[in-house]
Length: 424
Image (cartoon, rainbow, N blue to C red; front, side, top):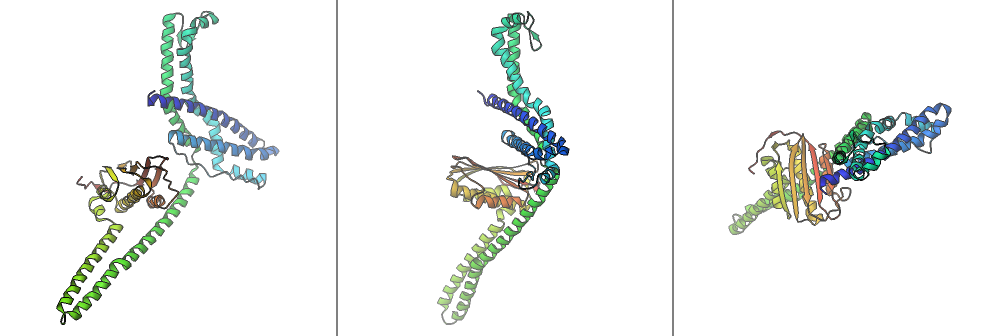
């Protein structure tokens, strides 16, 4: 069975499951509507909270299926404020003022109609086609007799062997069409569900404000930590060496007249100390903003990381130009952190990095052949990468099943700022 046909059968079965879900959502939506109508009688106050909770559970299920089956992300609304401790009237008041509840109710009314057409078409074609291929070629005479000599398969009259074979071919066409059409209609239903079930705009704006506040706090904390690191490296490294060099030169000055040989040795020592201080400063500058990144851009900077990595790193750069320096710096250090994690924890031997820019998004995919099991919620490495990307409205996705491979995808919203300047 080819992958295309296999995906079609899987999508067809999923359409059947969605059809069953639509029956449940229509039933629960009817109960919710009945509860609203019974509010003046008092009965609705007892019926509405559990019915609205059940409807939200079904809509959450639909959102999860859209994500897992079609990759369509649907941001859920805020949870219903249904606290069993509070009075029924308070619960009902919270439900009636919840915009997400009304969207769920609209979804329960429209999805069985519009969505039902989308998800029921492939199974209907498959069942009807299977009947034409597997049943009617063997029972067409009995069917004709049972119908008094008049029987049609869809729009084709079946009267003899020739028309039976034509109906068989038509059934095969229905069967193939249903299987091939199922994945596309399943994706279309997911997009339709996103229109109805996405969180209200007010909720999205509130979440956006909260997210920006958090990322701003993380950015300020990261900046403060970076400044402390630079201060510590200067104090413990270059500054200490420069102080030692000054003391050595002072001693050499005093010995120059009485012991030229000792003064010469001290001058040689001072020169070596100055070289080490210069190396410290270069390493410090490289940690802040690598010269190759400023001179050659992100693609060549990542290649320099690959040269220093203990793993076998293959890089495919599809970048057509340069980006803003802060974006390139964030992407560079994010890749550096991911490579470090792969070398330390994944047990990988080979890493593949793909850099591309499409639709205003810089996307970097890092794939290693390690044992998998990476989790961005554990440890500090991937969490640090997520915080670094979040400062630029970026995203981090980690797919790392046990046994591997681990695929880390980093995305940054940005635009090209200058033509490509790469020698590769």
